[in-house]
Image (cartoon, rainbow, N blue to C red; front, side, top):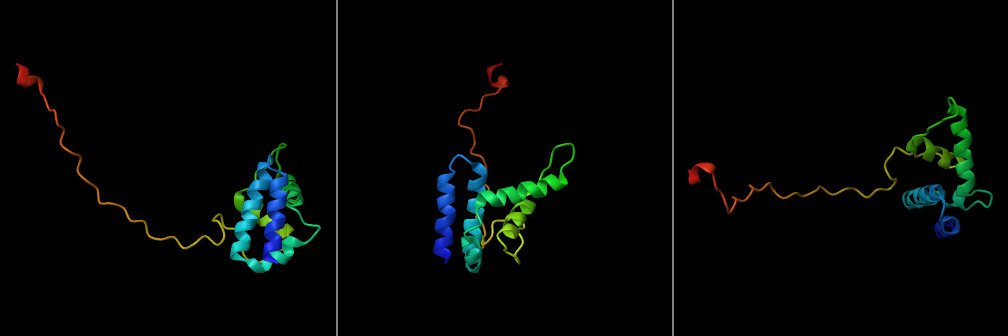
Length: 126
């Protein structure tokens, strides 16, 4: 089922290469499926598409609009997408779902700057 959902998402993304919104939501859904493969059956539903999830997002934004303008945060927008697909439970928090545990970053100790090879003062010439 997960493979079918991934194929469906990628097919819609490939068919809409010039639509950056479908690309962003598609990537989000692919990451979501990695973390929650059980949600694949909801994404595979024939009547559900990324394009229609964007319409759901637009309709929610219209409810918040003020003077003809509305803004949704990433968390709000992706939560609407998940709700559209009938996915409940994990709420988008701003981080990519199923992000692998980050390893501690190893940094080299600070080094002293190398002494300049050429050091001349005005007093040396006077």
